[in-house]
Length: 162
Image 1 (tube, rainbow, N blue to C red):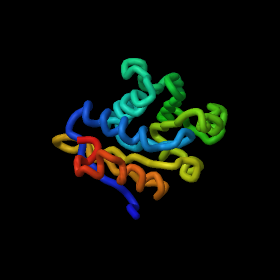
Image 2 (cartoon, rainbow, N blue to C red):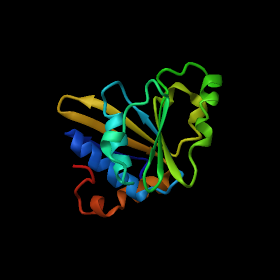
Image 3 (cartoon, one colour):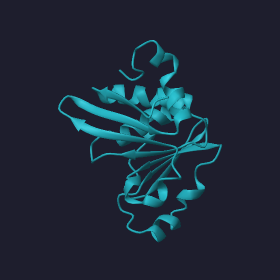
């Protein structure tokens, strides 16, 4: 059983393909934390993830100022950016804990700012900027990591996102 999965992403389009493939194997209701510095690929990941549910990639924008965006497709994808949230009380007032239901997905940028989110999230993706692309490490519920690792594209040795 994997404790984590790792991959190297060379282009934004490869990041979106990886995200689309991850989205296809996760059940609705999944909450995902996206960790990484500015420009690491978090919003690009959300664009690809949302596209798996018939949401146009151009509809997906960073919710830095709106805090939470909802994208409606075959299911809802909620995209939160906690960069500007400064306290647990403010986090609770966003309503974020009510968003992940079996009718949609919740993807949160900057979840590491709030320890209270650690047990709430099912999966974490950690994005690191490297010279020729991005290193992405996936951690979280073992059953989700196994589904991703056993997905059709991964089994063929393609590393689902390259």
